[in-house]
Amino acid sequence: MNTIITPDNPHGYNRYGFAWQYVPQGGQAHLDLGCNDGAFLVTLKGKGIGRLVGVDVSQDAVHKARERFDGMEIIHITQTEPLPFEDGVFTSITVLDVIEHVAEQNILLDELNRVLKHDGTLVVAVPGQHIFSFLDTGNLKFRFPRLHRWYYCRRHSEAEYEYRYVSNPDGLIGDVSTEKRWHEHFSRAKLEKLLNKSVFRVVVFDGAGFFNRIIRDIRFLCGWLRPLQPVFGKIQALDAKFFKSSNLFCVARKRLHTKAKQNRR
Image (cartoon, helix red, strand yellow):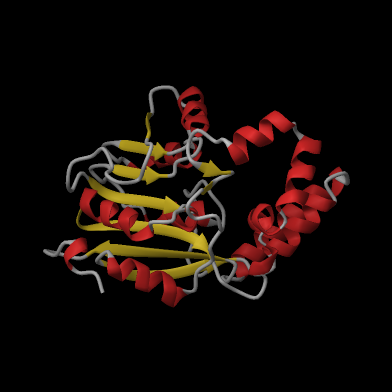
């Protein structure tokens, strides 16, 4: 990872550390789309941003965020378009590991362009396309559905599997939209082309990790070896710091005076 993580950054060499570093200090308003439990959003409080807003399509995530951080502005959305905000409300937006879960990616990005101020900052994190992408455990449920079901029910319950993967009220299969049905990976060229279609200009590319999928899978399989877990954690942190292929990050700006839907290529 090329980005320098400053001492005041509460995160490490990961998507949160990258995003925190590039979200502008003292902005008028910030939106974290796909805020999950709100843990990243709350770390932005020290940046002097006037308004912090989190949105998520998962009712469970929104409930956890509201419970965990009472008073935070967390909104449940049933779809990504239209977003429930006026034009040009936010000075910065983070979309961290969200785009790869969405089927209509440019519809989402058009909406983010609409609610972002001119020359506002968009920070994106997605899985990088590289040699170990095939080890993405997020796609096991699509590659081997019967095996995944057997394992999940054995570890949890049939009812929980049904709720999370079959009859999810938020239109998801786990954390992937039912229309998407795949956890996508991106090259720099692919992500830049996607952002350009919605009239964003990429100004910074970075990434983290190379062996992290291998390390994570070994760590999972060796979960019973508790004394080794901190060691695996340190190895993952070093991998994220010195490599930049497994996860892809970028900062983009909203282009001036043109509308996304009028500039599709």
